[in-house]
Length: 329
Ligand code: SF4
Image 1 (cartoon, rainbow, N blue to C red):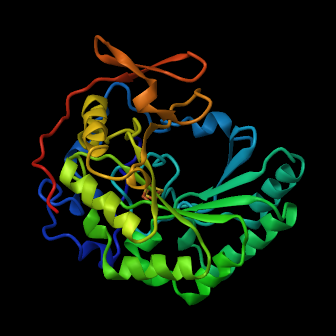
Image 2: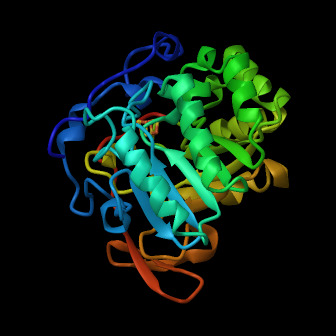
């Protein structure tokens, strides 16, 4: 990692930690920096998803033909220690400029095959609401039928920001989905639940993408409570991500063997709608790999993964650099 990933946390989210010790608390583990973040494992990089390779313009990643990702801001309410986009997040450039947005709009107007936009960053909902609404307005002027996914942790780390006005503004847009990231059942507080309900009342469908994290949610009881809790709030557990190979995050990664075993046991514990896809964002594959299908064994220090076309990928089989106790509910 070239420069250390900064620490930032909301008062609200910090108060969810019972101890400010990442080795003992699943909330603290997500926001308190650890010395091991300065270690770089051999397979780790600053840009594990290769955003730079697929970026025709500043702030735009165009990896798949029909989808484009806009990096709306580099700011987040909380800097998650597992963040895979740390090559961009909090590098001091703030929200997208008018000039950058204009260039992206011109590009999209020339790409009618793009039907789906992902708004990410950073966290798009940390942008001033008026500006964010103006960005949405301009995007929908290019194509009123865009399907838009707003990827945000704000309902989890700063739920008060999801007020009636913001929920109504998002709800006015047909085809807009909110994708959040709840990683532990303790994050499903009454405040978070109220924010999610506000969005749903305004017609915004909500999906959840969790990341499988050592010391946070790498045990059956925690994942069961998490996915049942989400379903209870009418939020679909969509993905459980295998952590990406971002520099300085090895201590948070769980092995694919453990992940597959957790999924096998989860199937016996939760109903179909509560079960996410255990997935890996594998650069070069035509989309995310469903690890329960893509896993084809172990060779030496690597897991062998294959995509739908039979192309082979390797993901390191590594031992954790720190041993944590099971996370607490
Ligand atoms: S909210 Fe998303 S982009 Fe921001 S630090 Fe967390 S994982 Fe990274």
